[in-house]
Length: 388
Image 1: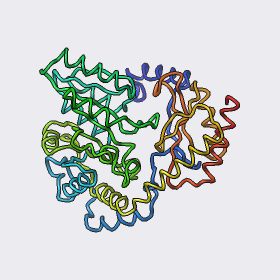
Image 2: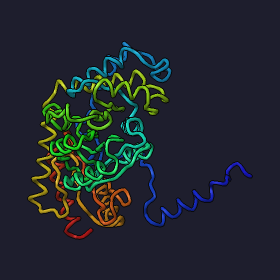
Image 3: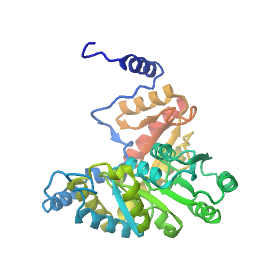
């Protein structure tokens, strides 16, 4: 057997070739030279000189390059414990536990809290990280139609009939959905969960730094802290750094420390990451106008798109604005044409989204100018009117 040939190569080569034939092959782009309408850097923190300065100042107090181990061994310290407390206070939570990423947080949370005999009901558009966490749980799992309260109640009734008091029921939703940009009817869902004694879990990834007067997220802004069993806030989107936190009560924190394998068996975040997270929260808390500025840019886009009469625009009040362009070939071509015009807007293909609902996913940022928004809308109008 040669060094470049392995038994698994044949199948991998065959599957990669099939992806290329079907137009589904993914590759990595090194340079993103277009005007950014694709990243999750909603507030511009990832490129903020002020944030970089704050991180450097904090790193002078914590010069270590690594955490040296998992938090249950040598990787815990007063810096991360203090940071968890501060973030919990910011989001009106009682306690929190930091994970290395939003994916790790959802994997760790769902695989740890849901055990044999439990039931997980999840929105049909829930993020892949939640789905993967559910797969690792020894629980029954059923989806319900997106944001459909009647269907959720049917599922809750069915779970109560089938499993009675033998197991717990968990309901998993996102506050802002990453591929549609719409918002969960959280108050009504909280009432349903209370009625049927279900535990509500909310992924706030795309609401952190975006929803609420201070960017505190949907749960906190609606005053639903005591109605939500757990929530996940990530730091890699509007906060411009990396990592995530699971918020809940102190008992949940203790449970995750003892049972969440994604927390137990991984090296802790290094001091530089913790410094970035703490600095980002400081910057957000000191500048609540950043959140309203972002909301203003979103309103500007929606107004311009409405005036232009762009077809296929999904309803959304968040920075995620999507235009349906059915067909992988069509939406990929539209993205390429926008890139040639200087705008970085990415296509979302099936099977990531349902076939026939392929779309351009447009992310609005605080740093996008009114001129950029108007030019983008004009280009989109031309693409949609011509049928691409």
